[in-house]
Length: 259
Image (tube, rainbow, N blue to C red; front, side, top):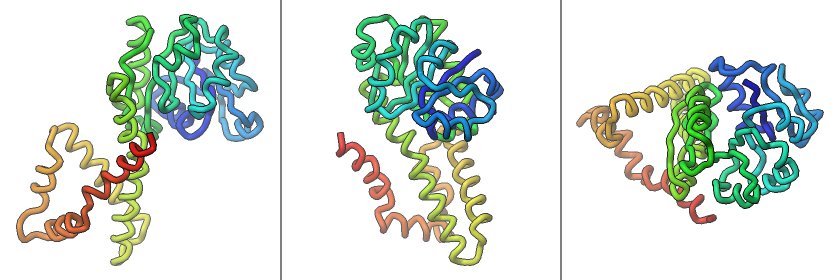
């Protein structure tokens, strides 16, 4: 299956690496273009590097649009005819089905909007999928199957997907800050940072997997570990006194306030 990328930044690279790691595609089946053609040639390994979005659209059956949201219209409008026969998967945050219908002016191009996150690079991502699309049932199953190769999927209505995307796509940055902070706390008392970060990262991954597989309430998980009189309860108490829960919530408050 030939897959294309219009824009090849961090998110596109993560999707590409995830699909390759999942043995869904081989690099030679991938076509990509970016604003800096020479730079893309230098860092892209084994893929077909194209000079224009038109070249990408003419070669593939599935096209990921991974440019910045404010660039989508100027990039996509000129190649509408070339996109006929393709499935367009938009990764541009904030651009939903209705916005693409405006851009395509009723041309019938098949498209769907998604919000992936960077852990898809190691096939551990979560991708939010807009439930409103114009794909046929077989096409939709194909897209879902592709995205399941790089992690879990969550199908949501247009009015809910952006909030979910804020949590899922911004969350890796917040989680990385927690990993850094807890790892640095370990280093403060004698662990070397490499060991501390490795321990914390596996702990975070394992805790997330425990919650998903056991469907445990996170608050109950805290109680299970923070037994009365133990060491954990001292740390939990300190975090609560520092309003840890509210501080984390401030991240989403800040994003929502910009809408």
